[in-house]
Length: 459
Image (cartoon, rainbow, N blue to C red; front, top):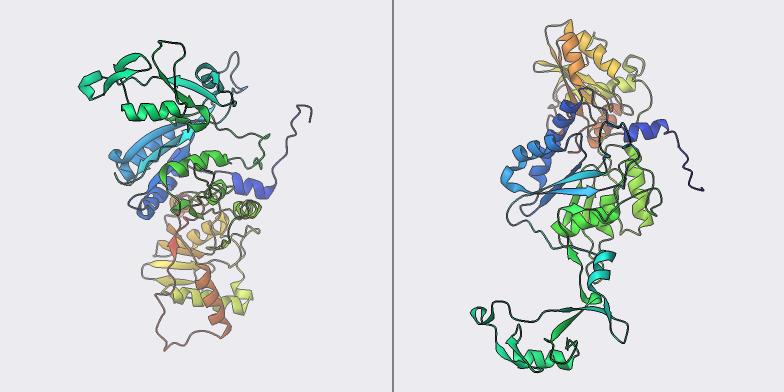
């Protein structure tokens, strides 16, 4: 109030939902992005396009990475989005200019990928300088040249109209019709006739590669305080340029859900509904809840919220297999479903598969970093130097290289699909599997997590 801004300290869940933690700096971020860009390329339709938003930290590196993944020839535009006005961080003695823009990198899957013309409103200065005439009914217009460029060489007709002989853009019949409709005027007797172009009939100016007309701040009606939130208008411009009504839009880093809301509420040039289908993915449970809330508030058509894996962040992992017989049955069942053989006599090694140890994590929490180190340490005392960790979730700052360097053990994280863990739970409730039953090696379908310090890839 009164120009003063309150600073709110983030809660623990907000810190977990918002932070980007890259233990190895830019290298680990680019490693994470490479894995996801490879996947997104495979998911992209033959006529699809992909936009990647970034700031000054990684923009140039991502451009090189995307050239490699998608092909230099598929690059279409570097779009500059001026997301903010002047920054207070540029003043006398500052070490850099105010950073007020981000970058959008646009790549197309093929030459068949659409790029629709999208218009933005004329600036007030442009309207004031050009549309400076008003009809008797209040309609604003400008006058425009109707002489035929190139004269006879371009095939333009020559005749006299309103006492003036010229090469014209239109045939005599069309000129007569436009004159009768009040669209052709003479500003004075003997002057060259001109065309009345009304402002309310013009779509605006076609967008270029610099977008400085869209912003978001804490005074915007759609602002919710999510640090990486984008304006709905920004996403709707992107969607309008590279898709058509009914197309499918995927946002693999949904954040506060702006892409889903934008796709759901799209309208065409006449203001009629022109929604796109959408899929929004995020590894943060908090982001999923924010997205769902915004979609409900936007009166979205019915949609489903699907959970792939578990999102609990409830404290440190504790190995309770020895104390809970039912949990031990679940552990052994998951080892078998994975195609391994349960083992006894180890604190953290629950089975083996080929040349790898297998560790089964809990159902309702991630395997903590300290537990990963304990698993790797125990494996390091054996002749087998590789461990597959099967878990319902991976901590946000998990990094396999730490354990590998310390104990000489290769650690591979595998996400347990919810259906597989539910099946194992039902199976463990009935007791251990019969030794005569075939091992159900095809039921698991575990998806490998990224080796970089990030949450699992939304495969």
